[in-house]
Image (cartoon, rainbow, N blue to C red; front, top):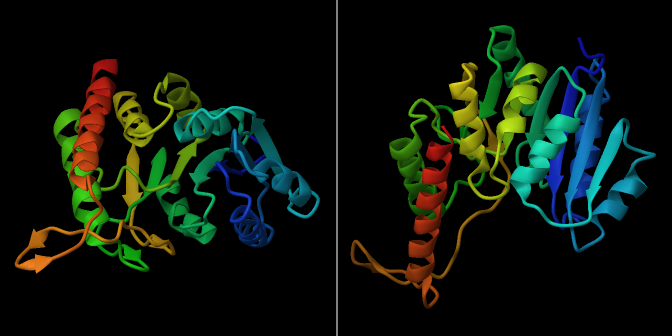
Length: 257
């Protein structure tokens, strides 16, 4: 068994401004726990001073490590890299903006003890709290639309929210799943879960995520129940392209198996 109980992986691209506060809060919480841990920031070829900021914070943040990629590969790539570099018995990845606070991990421990191999945060199951709520655009078009396409094409009907950036794995699950992953950018999350399901791992999605993050594209202009909402020129073309790309990615994931 690993001597490190928990590894926290933070993928980061151009996060010099948000990382200091995030690392401060994670360190503040973990330093009070009675287990050994490590924090891995995986720099995805940032063009700002993300790597330099992490190096400067290393003396003051316990057990902080930096994996510094000089080129940009995509969030899926650096999450995979961090998961396989980690040493913890349990490994989670979370976003650099701290949209889900680290104390939410307390909701994971009971499920791991119940025998689940993967525990993921969900913004869609009953009881979940988002503060502030997601915009209509993100929730209906980008959220529910993506979910429906994902469920129809690759399954995972039992998973309500595959995209929440707060996911936990046992070391065994991480070491078997992530070497099989191929997608480096958008839609790497459902690929992880499809592989996990194919390998027979038990997945649990828990409620209660409180995201302190503002979403949404403003200034739409289209009739909706008699109301006119402004939107930028060409947004319909952008949406059509997004869904076409989503469809291609989902088909790619399905072909893997």
